[in-house]
Image 1 (spheres, rainbow, N blue to C red):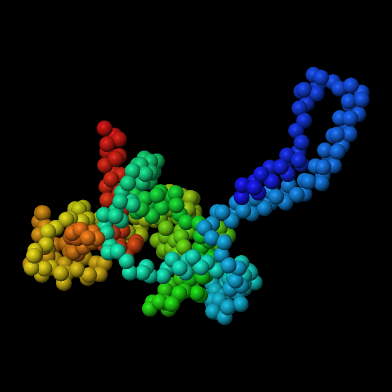
Image 2: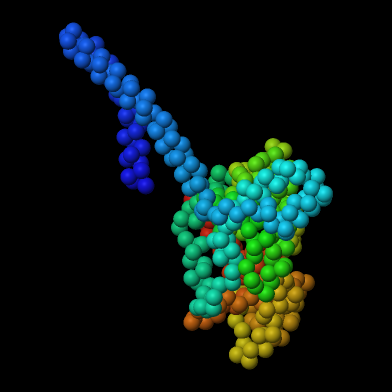
Amino acid sequence: MKSFVSALAALVFAAAPHIDADAAAKHPPSKAKAVKTKAKVEKNKAKAAKTAPKARKALAVTAAVAAVSAIDYTGEPINFGEWQAVSAFVDEMVAKHGFDRTELEAQMRQVRFVDSAVQLVKPAPPGKPKNWQAYSARFIEPIRINAGLRFWNENEAALARAEATYGVPAEIIVGIIGVETIYGRDTGRFRVLDTLTTLAFAYPDAPNKQARAEFFRSELENALLLARHEKIDPFSLLGSFAGAVGMPQFMPGNILKYGVDFDGDGHIDLRNSTSDAIGSVANFLIEHGWKPSDTGPNVMPVDVSANRAWEPLLGRGLEATLRPDELEAAGVITPASLPAHRLYGLVDLQNGAEATEYWVANDNFFAITKYNRSYFYAMSVIDLGRAVREARMAQAL
């Protein structure tokens, strides 16, 4: 690349030779020298005319390289339009949603196969045991906390309005957007149409292959519907390797279901509108079980008895299903009494070779797991939001 840039610079300078007009005016040349200078100028003009096309071509190549660098892959130019399953998908989009067949077929011919997306959705090979402390350290760190502090300060009004409208605390919204994309810094650079088409029609062999392929096929449908609704080029949608879009990393289907035009401009834009991102995160959580009336801590550390009668309470899914008396009877010891009318779940956070941490979690904790089906994820969201809130309080002192 370095040699290419040097060559490009040489072509550009050759195409546009520098002339110091002020110096020429101060020191007029002699007649003989003027003739020589004129000849030299004519020679430079000829040289410029000859090299200009090369310079323009080099600049065009540079622009193309810059465009490619905006995405994380090159992809393989496979003609998906020739695949029978893709042809059936086009038929369905035309019949079900009224898409223009010629236009959609042309788009399918432009889609690229993304092998890196295929590799990334494969299950991770067995390895080291899970380590909550190592996972947490990736998110609860100064760069993300400072970025969260700026985000909260810059979007204080929208966060307060979302909290008042939906009952979701600002720190939880801040925690989610921070964990997902560091407040919009890393929203993904895969073309969504490329990754969703690849995963819909070339999902790798796995026990859940059919279900996952159907999911991505549905999300491809949603991405095309979203692009049409918002009147944008579907190839302009960039996101993660799995097709998640914008600051909060919503899948296209979730944008259509839970996206909110929180800034009132008539569009739902999770890529460029922080207000829309904030409102949409709050709306998603409410739609997935967040209870504004539960103002107590979302998680509480506990001790567990040596008789291990509590073990059957683990692994009961991402729901709060246990009464406080059930937890107590199984040997779960809480630092404070739990409200008898609320339900909880027992959460284990493994720490590699170190002792596992145990917590009880309420419905709001489990609402966060609907965003990402992981205890580690939900705890990181809560911890990051708390850290940013504490940094904000310290800043106000």
